[in-house]
Image (cartoon, rainbow, N blue to C red; front, side, top):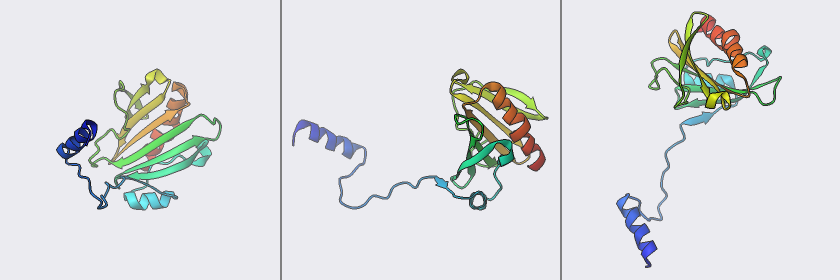
Length: 168
């Protein structure tokens, strides 16, 4: 056995990695994709926040993370580069109030239609915009790429935050 192979075997042993022919069971993926909104809502146990098609956004991705966070992707009907990700969870979920999954940004609070929304740019807005908020017993987040700040604020103000104020 050469020195490299011996070192690899020693490292594997130290890390508890065994060389075996038995199959190893992998950790299940916490993200489950769905073909329909109804299937995702049934799995999550609540109706996720969704933008109606009349808004100019169409849903092109639906998943539920760990059975607790609904994650919907949207594309713009008007701009091929504009995409939006919207998440919904119960406020008492183990994920807390910020379910955006975005870290290392400077959050700034802004009141939109009576709701306090934390908003941040990603890489100065070059990589997009993100927001999270709570209404009632639900928390929400939205992340956009391909939109400028004004466009993102319009989606929040006249779409997402407004919908949560009326239906959650």
